Amino acid sequence: MGTPEELPGYAASRLLESCAAGWVGFAIMPINKIVATYAEAIANLQDGAVVMLDGFGGPGGMPTGLIAALRDKGVKDLTIISNTAGLPGFGVPPGIDYHNHAILFENRQVRKVVATFPVPRSGTTPFYEQYRAGDVELELVPQGTLAERIRAGGAGIPAFYTPTGVGTLMAGGKESRVFDGREYLLEHALTADFALLRAHKADPMGNAVYRGTSRNFNSVMASAGRITVLEVDHLVELGDLDPEAVVTPGIYVQRVVQRPAGLI
Image (cartoon, rainbow, N blue to C red):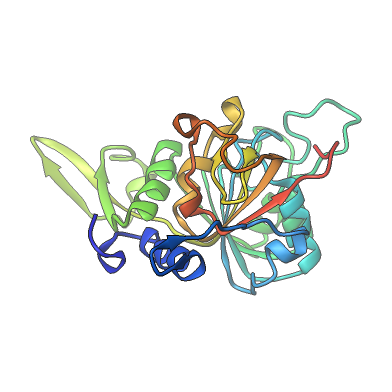
């Protein structure tokens, strides 16, 4: 395994933090990462932060409570890494009160977006209006490439080659190489200051499982954030989760906050 200093990516910093917080000599002490409020969970998120937000498009996997807290905090010049740039009402029946990170654009808190599907096929969004006005920068990334750039960031891999995007506008300005007669583009890893995620169940140490397709980007983002915060539907006791079912180990998680009942 090597020493903590030899570990790749943000895993090293997490291991060092866990050791400092929970190891006394050779006795391993339980770590409780639960915080009482959303505000406490993002208390040190500052202007200019890079923030990963899980979610495919609709409410599944979306940390809506943390997003609302981020809006209320009012921090500015954020870079948001997510599958979309906020699609108001997407995937929700009419009459249901639901919000996503579109509210951050409504509040003009975002400077740049890294996304795959930034806008819907028709209609407009707060992001779209600000993008057309030149107020928000967009980095458009193919979906599989986005997932792999995030995964690479968490694994300490600085860059990788992929054939996706060769011969398209996506190739503009990117280094390319030919391997075995096929052209590939160099893509750089993505990391974040904060990864704000949603889990179905988690224990006090941050070990987490997800529910169905709401898992989407959660598992890769968890390791790519310097501070990973889980918004969870259900808190369980240590030992209640089957170790074989845990998707995100607690070493990747710094804070856990429970969602109020009934929040969509």
